[in-house]
Length: 265
Image 1 (tube, rainbow, N blue to C red):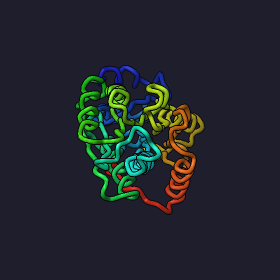
Image 2 (image 1 turned 30 degrees about the vertical axis):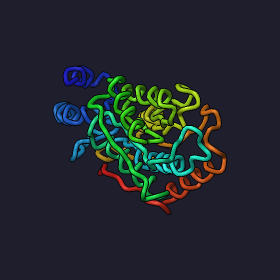
Image 3 (image 1 turned 45 degrees about the horizontal axis):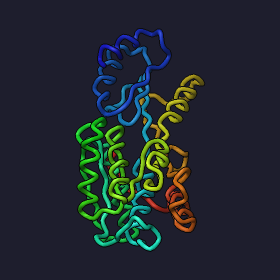
Image 4 (image 1 turned 180 degrees about the vertical axis):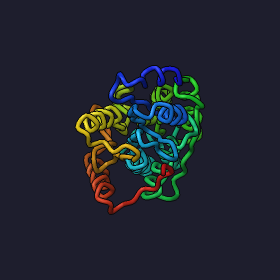
Protein backbone atom coordinates (compact mmCIF):
# COMPACT_ATOMS: atom_id res chain seq x y z
CA UNK A 1 0.00 0.00 0.00
CA UNK A 2 2.92 2.34 0.63
CA UNK A 3 4.04 1.95 -2.98
CA UNK A 4 0.49 2.46 -4.23
CA UNK A 5 0.05 5.70 -2.28
CA UNK A 6 3.39 7.06 -3.43
CA UNK A 7 2.61 6.19 -7.04
CA UNK A 8 -0.43 8.53 -7.00
CA UNK A 9 1.31 11.31 -5.05
CA UNK A 10 3.14 12.88 -7.96
CA UNK A 11 0.70 15.75 -8.47
CA UNK A 12 -1.34 14.11 -11.22
CA UNK A 13 -4.34 13.83 -8.89
CA UNK A 14 -5.87 16.74 -6.98
CA UNK A 15 -6.72 14.55 -3.97
CA UNK A 16 -5.59 11.10 -2.88
CA UNK A 17 -8.12 9.28 -0.68
CA UNK A 18 -7.09 6.52 1.72
CA UNK A 19 -8.88 4.88 4.62
CA UNK A 20 -8.74 2.95 7.88
CA UNK A 21 -6.30 2.64 10.74
CA UNK A 22 -3.85 0.55 8.71
CA UNK A 23 -3.17 3.56 6.47
CA UNK A 24 -2.29 6.13 9.15
CA UNK A 25 1.48 5.70 9.12
CA UNK A 26 1.56 5.33 5.34
CA UNK A 27 -0.31 8.56 4.63
CA UNK A 28 1.65 10.39 7.32
CA UNK A 29 4.94 9.43 5.66
CA UNK A 30 3.66 10.18 2.15
CA UNK A 31 2.33 13.59 3.18
CA UNK A 32 5.76 14.57 4.46
CA UNK A 33 7.52 13.17 1.41
CA UNK A 34 5.12 14.86 -1.03
CA UNK A 35 4.17 18.17 0.65
CA UNK A 36 2.42 19.50 -2.47
CA UNK A 37 0.03 16.53 -2.69
CA UNK A 38 -3.33 16.75 -0.92
CA UNK A 39 -4.72 13.74 0.96
CA UNK A 40 -7.98 12.71 2.59
CA UNK A 41 -7.95 9.90 5.15
CA UNK A 42 -11.16 8.49 6.56
CA UNK A 43 -11.87 6.55 9.78
CA UNK A 44 -8.59 7.55 11.41
CA UNK A 45 -5.76 10.10 11.29
CA UNK A 46 -2.16 10.65 12.33
CA UNK A 47 -1.93 12.08 15.87
CA UNK A 48 -0.55 15.28 14.39
CA UNK A 49 -2.23 15.96 11.07
CA UNK A 50 0.12 17.23 8.36
CA UNK A 51 -0.98 20.49 6.73
CA UNK A 52 -1.81 18.66 3.47
CA UNK A 53 -4.00 15.94 5.04
CA UNK A 54 -7.70 16.24 5.87
CA UNK A 55 -9.32 13.61 8.05
CA UNK A 56 -12.99 12.67 7.88
CA UNK A 57 -14.28 10.53 10.70
CA UNK A 58 -17.64 9.04 11.52
CA UNK A 59 -19.40 8.98 14.86
CA UNK A 60 -20.07 5.27 14.80
CA UNK A 61 -20.45 5.53 18.57
CA UNK A 62 -23.65 7.55 18.04
CA UNK A 63 -25.18 5.09 15.61
CA UNK A 64 -24.15 2.20 17.84
CA UNK A 65 -25.85 3.86 20.80
CA UNK A 66 -29.13 3.46 18.93
CA UNK A 67 -28.25 -0.17 18.15
CA UNK A 68 -27.62 -0.80 21.84
CA UNK A 69 -30.99 0.68 22.73
CA UNK A 70 -32.69 -1.58 20.18
CA UNK A 71 -30.84 -4.70 21.35
CA UNK A 72 -31.74 -4.04 24.97
CA UNK A 73 -35.39 -3.42 24.10
CA UNK A 74 -35.50 -6.77 22.33
CA UNK A 75 -33.98 -8.83 25.13
CA UNK A 76 -36.25 -7.18 27.71
CA UNK A 77 -39.46 -7.40 25.64
CA UNK A 78 -39.56 -11.01 24.51
CA UNK A 79 -43.35 -10.82 24.16
CA UNK A 80 -42.87 -8.52 21.16
CA UNK A 81 -40.03 -10.52 19.57
CA UNK A 82 -40.84 -14.21 19.00
CA UNK A 83 -37.21 -15.21 18.48
CA UNK A 84 -36.03 -13.70 21.77
CA UNK A 85 -36.00 -15.82 24.91
CA UNK A 86 -35.20 -13.05 27.37
CA UNK A 87 -34.00 -15.73 29.76
CA UNK A 88 -30.46 -14.41 30.10
CA UNK A 89 -31.03 -10.71 29.28
CA UNK A 90 -27.91 -10.90 27.13
CA UNK A 91 -26.81 -9.24 23.87
CA UNK A 92 -23.53 -9.35 21.97
CA UNK A 93 -21.22 -7.61 19.55
CA UNK A 94 -18.76 -9.28 17.17
CA UNK A 95 -16.07 -6.91 15.94
CA UNK A 96 -13.55 -7.35 13.17
CA UNK A 97 -10.35 -6.24 14.92
CA UNK A 98 -9.45 -4.73 18.27
CA UNK A 99 -8.93 -1.22 16.84
CA UNK A 100 -9.97 2.23 18.12
CA UNK A 101 -12.61 2.63 15.41
CA UNK A 102 -14.19 -0.74 16.28
CA UNK A 103 -14.02 -0.04 19.99
CA UNK A 104 -15.91 3.16 19.27
CA UNK A 105 -18.78 0.95 18.10
CA UNK A 106 -18.43 -1.03 21.33
CA UNK A 107 -18.62 1.91 23.77
CA UNK A 108 -21.62 3.39 21.97
CA UNK A 109 -23.39 0.02 21.92
CA UNK A 110 -22.76 -0.56 25.64
CA UNK A 111 -24.03 2.90 26.51
CA UNK A 112 -27.24 2.31 24.55
CA UNK A 113 -27.84 -1.01 26.29
CA UNK A 114 -27.16 0.53 29.69
CA UNK A 115 -29.59 3.39 29.04
CA UNK A 116 -32.43 0.87 28.71
CA UNK A 117 -31.46 -1.62 31.42
CA UNK A 118 -28.06 -1.66 33.19
CA UNK A 119 -28.58 -5.30 34.15
CA UNK A 120 -28.43 -6.52 30.53
CA UNK A 121 -25.17 -8.37 29.91
CA UNK A 122 -23.07 -7.38 26.87
CA UNK A 123 -20.70 -9.92 25.32
CA UNK A 124 -17.92 -8.68 23.00
CA UNK A 125 -15.48 -10.62 20.83
CA UNK A 126 -13.13 -9.87 17.92
CA UNK A 127 -12.63 -12.01 14.83
CA UNK A 128 -9.08 -10.75 14.25
CA UNK A 129 -9.79 -9.66 10.67
CA UNK A 130 -12.64 -8.44 8.48
CA UNK A 131 -12.85 -11.39 6.12
CA UNK A 132 -13.26 -14.66 8.04
CA UNK A 133 -17.02 -15.22 7.88
CA UNK A 134 -16.70 -18.69 9.43
CA UNK A 135 -15.03 -17.27 12.53
CA UNK A 136 -17.67 -14.53 12.68
CA UNK A 137 -20.30 -17.27 12.56
CA UNK A 138 -18.57 -19.30 15.28
CA UNK A 139 -18.28 -16.34 17.64
CA UNK A 140 -21.89 -15.29 17.16
CA UNK A 141 -23.09 -18.89 17.59
CA UNK A 142 -21.22 -19.08 20.89
CA UNK A 143 -22.99 -15.93 22.06
CA UNK A 144 -26.39 -17.28 21.02
CA UNK A 145 -25.58 -20.56 22.79
CA UNK A 146 -24.86 -18.52 25.93
CA UNK A 147 -28.28 -16.89 25.79
CA UNK A 148 -27.78 -13.78 23.66
CA UNK A 149 -30.98 -12.66 21.95
CA UNK A 150 -29.26 -10.16 19.65
CA UNK A 151 -25.75 -9.94 18.19
CA UNK A 152 -24.51 -6.77 16.47
CA UNK A 153 -21.96 -7.33 13.72
CA UNK A 154 -19.21 -4.75 13.14
CA UNK A 155 -16.86 -7.10 11.34
CA UNK A 156 -17.17 -6.29 7.64
CA UNK A 157 -17.19 -9.42 5.50
CA UNK A 158 -16.61 -11.58 8.58
CA UNK A 159 -19.89 -10.24 9.91
CA UNK A 160 -21.84 -12.03 7.20
CA UNK A 161 -21.26 -15.13 9.32
CA UNK A 162 -22.90 -13.37 12.27
CA UNK A 163 -26.05 -12.78 10.24
CA UNK A 164 -26.11 -16.43 9.18
CA UNK A 165 -25.68 -17.57 12.77
CA UNK A 166 -28.71 -15.50 13.82
CA UNK A 167 -30.90 -17.27 11.32
CA UNK A 168 -29.66 -20.73 12.27
CA UNK A 169 -30.04 -20.00 15.99
CA UNK A 170 -33.46 -18.44 15.35
CA UNK A 171 -32.41 -15.28 17.18
CA UNK A 172 -31.63 -11.76 15.92
CA UNK A 173 -28.71 -9.85 14.43
CA UNK A 174 -28.11 -6.21 13.54
CA UNK A 175 -26.18 -5.25 10.42
CA UNK A 176 -23.66 -2.50 9.80
CA UNK A 177 -22.37 0.01 7.24
CA UNK A 178 -24.99 -0.67 4.55
CA UNK A 179 -28.58 -1.92 4.76
CA UNK A 180 -28.21 -5.65 5.42
CA UNK A 181 -31.76 -6.17 6.65
CA UNK A 182 -32.83 -8.43 3.81
CA UNK A 183 -29.78 -10.72 3.83
CA UNK A 184 -31.42 -13.06 6.37
CA UNK A 185 -35.12 -12.04 6.22
CA UNK A 186 -36.90 -12.07 9.55
CA UNK A 187 -33.74 -12.30 11.63
CA UNK A 188 -32.09 -8.90 11.10
CA UNK A 189 -33.69 -6.19 13.19
CA UNK A 190 -31.99 -3.17 11.61
CA UNK A 191 -28.69 -1.95 10.20
CA UNK A 192 -26.45 0.83 11.45
CA UNK A 193 -25.56 2.92 8.43
CA UNK A 194 -22.10 4.42 8.26
CA UNK A 195 -22.22 6.61 5.19
CA UNK A 196 -18.54 6.51 4.26
CA UNK A 197 -19.21 6.91 0.54
CA UNK A 198 -21.29 10.03 1.04
CA UNK A 199 -18.69 11.42 3.42
CA UNK A 200 -15.92 10.96 0.88
CA UNK A 201 -18.00 12.57 -1.87
CA UNK A 202 -18.74 15.53 0.41
CA UNK A 203 -15.04 15.91 1.27
CA UNK A 204 -13.91 15.74 -2.34
CA UNK A 205 -16.55 18.26 -3.41
CA UNK A 206 -15.38 20.54 -0.60
CA UNK A 207 -11.79 20.13 -1.76
CA UNK A 208 -12.81 20.97 -5.31
CA UNK A 209 -14.48 24.14 -4.03
CA UNK A 210 -11.53 25.10 -1.87
CA UNK A 211 -13.52 24.58 1.34
CA UNK A 212 -11.98 21.40 2.73
CA UNK A 213 -9.99 22.09 5.89
CA UNK A 214 -6.62 20.38 5.66
CA UNK A 215 -4.79 19.73 8.89
CA UNK A 216 -8.12 19.22 10.64
CA UNK A 217 -10.69 16.50 11.36
CA UNK A 218 -14.25 16.77 10.04
CA UNK A 219 -16.76 14.55 11.83
CA UNK A 220 -20.00 13.08 10.51
CA UNK A 221 -22.61 11.85 12.99
CA UNK A 222 -26.36 11.73 13.55
CA UNK A 223 -26.59 15.53 13.25
CA UNK A 224 -25.30 15.58 9.66
CA UNK A 225 -26.42 12.12 8.53
CA UNK A 226 -22.98 10.55 8.69
CA UNK A 227 -24.49 7.60 10.57
CA UNK A 228 -28.00 6.33 11.20
CA UNK A 229 -30.15 3.31 11.92
CA UNK A 230 -32.41 1.93 9.21
CA UNK A 231 -35.38 -0.39 9.63
CA UNK A 232 -36.16 -0.54 5.90
CA UNK A 233 -36.50 -4.02 4.39
CA UNK A 234 -36.59 -5.69 7.83
CA UNK A 235 -40.09 -7.13 7.43
CA UNK A 236 -41.55 -4.78 10.06
CA UNK A 237 -40.25 -6.95 12.90
CA UNK A 238 -39.55 -3.91 15.09
CA UNK A 239 -42.82 -2.37 16.36
CA UNK A 240 -43.58 1.18 15.26
CA UNK A 241 -43.60 2.53 18.83
CA UNK A 242 -40.05 1.23 19.40
CA UNK A 243 -38.88 2.71 16.11
CA UNK A 244 -40.38 6.04 17.18
CA UNK A 245 -38.61 5.86 20.54
CA UNK A 246 -35.28 5.18 18.87
CA UNK A 247 -35.81 7.98 16.35
CA UNK A 248 -36.53 10.35 19.24
CA UNK A 249 -33.30 9.32 20.94
CA UNK A 250 -31.46 9.89 17.65
CA UNK A 251 -32.80 13.45 17.58
CA UNK A 252 -31.65 13.98 21.17
CA UNK A 253 -28.14 12.80 20.32
CA UNK A 254 -28.09 15.00 17.20
CA UNK A 255 -29.14 18.05 19.24
CA UNK A 256 -26.53 17.40 21.91
CA UNK A 257 -29.07 16.63 24.63
CA UNK A 258 -27.59 13.14 24.90
CA UNK A 259 -23.81 12.71 24.78
CA UNK A 260 -22.48 9.32 23.73
CA UNK A 261 -19.00 8.28 24.94
CA UNK A 262 -16.24 7.74 22.40
CA UNK A 263 -12.73 6.32 22.29
CA UNK A 264 -11.78 8.25 19.15
CA UNK A 265 -10.07 11.55 19.84
